[in-house]
Length: 339
Image (cartoon, helix red, strand yellow):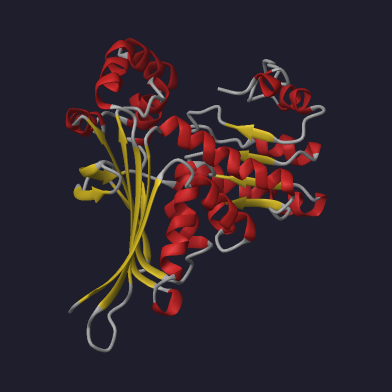
């Protein structure tokens, strides 16, 4: 909750995110725009980015739609640089902070390069986000999963190739499954370009029955899973059950990055694992979003439209990562794996 002195400064207005004029009216007199109005899946036009660049307003979003983030950067990066507007797409906790963690892990390996990098995420229930995160997951279950395999981009079926991963902070061992994450594509073309051979991202939830239910849901026709009104209705119908389960399982959010080097002369490989665990997903999403926003307001983010991954190794990226650790459990381990 915001303290009264801040809450009194917040006002609300209605806008249409498909109408540029409506967005521009809402941007009048503001210092920064933070776009969290998902789900972002099936959206093809980065209208909010365009409006902010044209209005000269710094911008960030928590977009988890890879194609939408890529289009925003491709279409408006040059204009944003020319007009001095700083914008970050695919920010937040994951994607966002997780990309900074991946770049940091690889930077600790010999030669600043990795043979493979695995991003793993776990959220108990919906992390107190409720039906919104369920609707986003439904949409993602029809999205091919972008991965790197032997240095080549591939598209794989979602919710396949399960793995058991041990998370820190009491989150325990969990099952995680392939799910599309903009971090993979954005890292592959920026911070980790040419520095990693294999890169993938997986997600899992609790209770395990939710994971089992997502598998048959992923087999539904794409036109069904991309039907926003239908998915919204389905999540609204199941909302009482979702809330009840959330009450029982908690709201932990856990992130783990595993980076392994190429074999050395003796055949051994260096391994770096970074983990960040928070007791509540909503809290850490808010914290990470605020961290990106703070750096935009401080002017540490360069002009242009950039992925969160592009801030890796910069003063802004380091400050965001440090801020995101607040209230969480941070673990960092380095090991050597024999041939």
